[in-house]
Length: 207
Image (cartoon, rainbow, N blue to C red; front, side, top):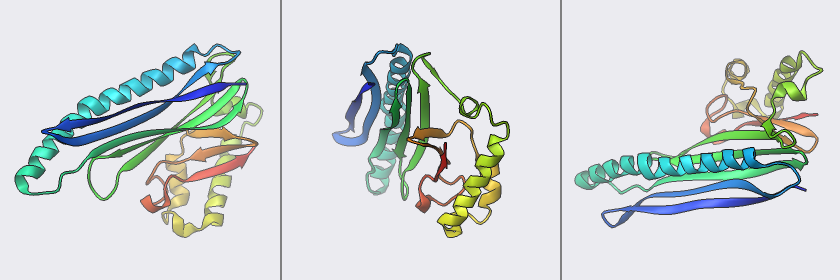
């Protein structure tokens, strides 16, 4: 059994006595497992530390500039936010699958969320691709795209852009997937095929 622990890097950054940046970065680490875990742990720790550096340097610098501008012009003070959430979706050794949602707010009506995913074969310390899953199905991409467009119609075309069918073809990324029991989930980023109100569109394809 894979034993994971979600660790958190969290802080509030102040400027002129006010909190102007908040961040909370949740990342996974395997603490006990029969497989080698160095690659998995190193990748996720490195990504978390890089994101923390981005919050402490880039976001903090941008927020200071915005704070001074807003203060001088009588505008409300905004707090920049960065949140990384990790969701483990499949654990069946040696296979491990997860996705991470990175939410960033730097002003405006709402923030933005970017989803990434990881699909690991821990026995060989490597991530695998769609080609591995569909090794004996040469036309698998066409089948997947057809099923996604069919599900769009079933969910309700009003949830998506009018030209969602062509947008699916334009924006589909083969690396944007994760596993759940008995299915593979494909996802699109915000605004790829649907308005912000729809969230991150996901489509389950049975395995």
